[in-house]
Image (cartoon, rainbow, N blue to C red):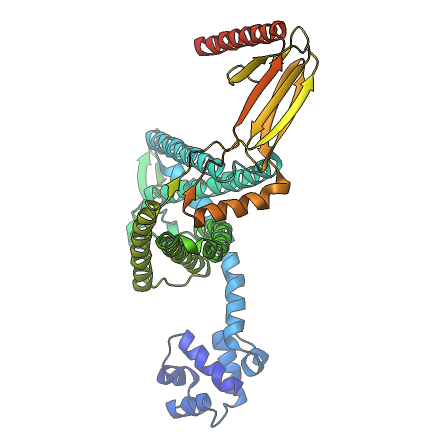
Length: 472
C-alpha cells in the first residue's frame, strides 16, 4: 500500500486533481483512482515517468514514505536557499548602491546610523531595567552564585541584543531601500526598446571621402519599484534564530515559575499549621490558591509559546477572573482576621551573655550611634552584659581595642523559633521577634569616662567623614 499512499501525497503536494495527473501520465482518471485505492498498480513505464516528473527514484516511490523524503529534501533545499539568498542580498545591495547618487548614498548611510543609535539606546534602557530587576530578584544570593548568574544572563542578553538589533536594522534597510529597487538585467529589456541602440552616421573627411561612423548607445540601468516586498530567506533564518533564543530564555523563565509553583504548593500545605487562626487561615488559603492559578496561567502561556500551541483565551480569561475574585476575597478575610490579633509589646530580651575584658586607654565599645548604658562599680576591669531575645546568640569581636557586639540567629534554636512563631500566630498574638540587644557596661568611674571620651572622639571623626562625603 506504500505506492498508493505515495501517489496520493505526490498528487496533493503538487495541487493536481486525478484528471490532471492522468493527463500528464497519458492514462484515464479511473486508472489513477485505482492506483491510489490499491486496486491495481501502474506499469513500469508509468512508474518511471512518475519518478521523472516529480524527481523521485523508484526505491523512494515504492518503499519509502514520500512525505518524509520530501521534508528531508526540502530542508536541504532551504539551507541552500538561505545561503543563495544571503549572497543575493549582498549583490542587490551593491547593485543598488552603484546606481544611487552620492546624496542618496549619504542619506541612506546617515539613516542607518540614526537607526543604530536608536536601537542601542533602547537596548541600553532595557539592560539597565533588567539589571535592577535581576538585582532585586537574586541580590540576596551569595556573591559567587549572584555574579555567575548575572554574567551568564548578561552574556545571553548582549548576544541576543546584537542579533535582534542587526536583524531589525537589516529588515528596515530592506523595506526602506532594497524592496524599492531592482536592477533590470539587459536580457530582461524588450528588444524593441533597443532598436536604436546603434546609430550610423556618414561623414566626409578633408579629401572628400565618406566614412561611416557607428555610435553605440550604452544601455541604461533601469530602476523600478518592487511591489512584492518579499522577505529575504536569510533574514527569515535570522528571525528564526532570534525566535529560538527568545524561546530558550522563555524556558528559563518558565523554570523559575515552575519552582515558584512548587513553592506555592508547599506553602499551601504549610498553611494548615495556622488553621486555628480561623477566618485569616481561610483568607490565606484562598490567596495561595489565587496565586497558584495565576502561576499556572503564566506557565501555560509560556509553554504554548515555546511549543507553538494556540492559547485558549476564553479559558485563560475565566481562570484570571476567578483568581482575581479569590484574591479580593482573600484580602478581605485577612484584614478581618487581623483585627482579632493582639499585639504584645513586652520586652523580649530574655537571654543574657556576659563578657569580661581588660581596660586600655583607647578602649571603645560598640558603634558610636548605638545606645550603651554605663554603670559604675569598684572594679578596674570592664564587664559587658548583653541582653537579647531568645533563639538568638551574640558574638564579641575585639579589633584594635574597639569592641563590636553582633546578634544573629542561632541555627541550633531555629526550629524552636519557628514553633514559637506558629504557636503565637495560632493564639492570635503578634510579638516582637527582632534581634535587637541591650548593652550594659560595668566598670570604675575613671574607666567609664575614658570609654565615653573615646566614643565621643570616634563619633566626631565619623561625622567629619560624612560631611566630607556630602561636600564631595
